[in-house]
Amino acid sequence: MAPLQCCLLWLLLPLSSWTQKFPTRDEELFQMQIRDKAFFHDASVIPDGAEISSYLFRDTPKRYFFVVEEDNTPLSVTVTPCDAPLEWRLSLQELLEEASGEGSGAPEPLELQRLEPQRQQATGEQGTGLFAYKGNDVESFVSAGSRSGLYQLELLSTEKDTHFKVYASTTPASDQPYPELPSDPRVDVTALGRTTVTLAWKPSPTAARLQQPVQYCVVVNREHNLKSLCAAEARLGADDAFMAAPKPGLDFSPFDFAHFGFTPGRERGLPPRAAPKPGRPAPARPRADTRKLCTGNKNLVTVSDLKPDTQYYFDVFVANRRSNTSTAYVGAFARTRPDTPHKTVQLKDGRVADVFVGRKGATLLRFAPAAAHRAVSLAVHSCLGAVRLQVRRDGELLLAQDVEGVRHFQLRGKPKAKYLLRLKGNRRGASVLKVLATTRPGKQSFPALPEDTRVKAFDRLRTCSSATVAWLGTQERNKFCLYRKEVDDSYSEDQKKRGQNQCLGPEARKKSEKVLCKYFHSQNLQRAVTTETVRGLQPGRAYLLDVYVIGHGGHSVKYQSKVVRTRKSC
Image (cartoon, rainbow, N blue to C red; front, side):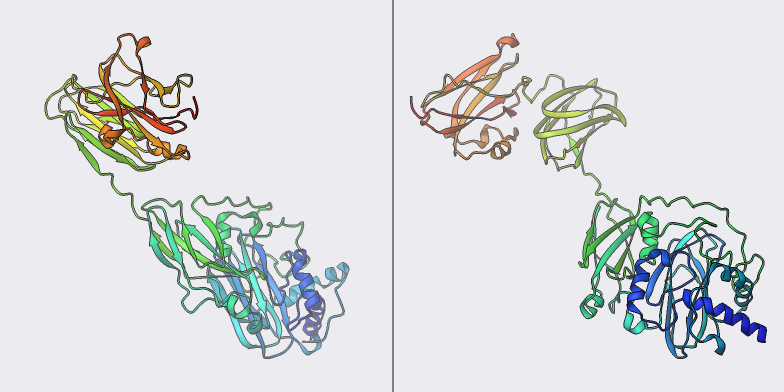
């Protein structure tokens, strides 16, 4: 018995300088040690009242120690697995009376080497098992009155190399290390859309009651709910979320597994495993389906840019900005709404259909001729903005191009063929169209337009009461009507754009605004130009001039509007 007491005494003397004796509250030393991350890097110590991060190689256990000197001391130990389940066990070896005094300081390296056999003998003792757990939940051991002695925490990962966090405290009631959850810790889904989900949760009492700074972070993924913010950051592959994995044999402390009781083949606690191959594990790559957004102290957020008809898992974590600890709410999951099926518009042979296409939206048109046909004439008038047109015949793509203004297409027909037209809007705004499909080639309701539909004003011919304008025609004889409207000096480009809807014909204008109507064409496109002088204008006023061309079927198309200003004095 005497040799064992001697060994334990030699063991506990150096441990008294390397471990945080419980209870201890030297705040200046404690804060210095917490700020100095190297102090705890791979050392077998757990500081009192702080959360530490560390790393486990697969199938290689790791042990931590701390001493509780007084009986009936409150004790709390919390282990947070990150990206893999853990097996961990907490055990107690009672202190001998000879070892309960203060240590004489940190031992020299030669002393450590001389004391190795005694440490291995002491740590070979099984001790009293207090708590054991296996899984990926955040789990705690809590005791209102723990016994004095040497406590050992042993951890093992059997799946893969992983990170984990450990927190231990002898004053858990006053420390409040982790942010507190409300009485109802659930995350509620308050609104669902095709690409958005709105979440709400009750605020943590930590901020209001303890006056501690907190922030909320939401993590979204498509696989399952997460147990901790540590697990979420592991999926995100954040390099700064964890300490770097150490290189075996280079930066392990003397108290690590090669020197402190981790002799291969020794059976105690968790069974020994084969040693891993040396080398630093490859850094984790961020998961493309995992997103993290922090909302500050707001407990309501709308997550956007999701995929329609897809199930997502939402987790909310409240983090203490001062201590960098966090607590998980009870997560939620929801499926976004599916895409609304596009309503298909049926086109009738020879009839013009009015079509509206929303911003970035799409509309489907179906044309099924009743009789056999050799060709289909298709006319599309994009009255407001450009659209993307696709035409398929029985599933075969016939054409795909952007359409702006009036366009005519000739499609080769087939017996009993069906045609599907898809119109897709642009990002700038909604589009308004008129579409005509017919199997009678000679029927053209839309007038032909020149490539240039601008109205040109001649500055030199401008007077105090008149303005002269010109526009291009085509080889086809059409009716042209000219309208005028007085506008304010503040008439802007935005107002001008709103008036560019070419589907609004002369019937939408006042009779008093009409200047004239005339028929015009020229077989020589070089001469297909007509001019008109607008008279009866007021000096120094601005006028909006519009030209409409009306086809044989009565359908009209408006040229680009032109604003002219008369001279103030002549």
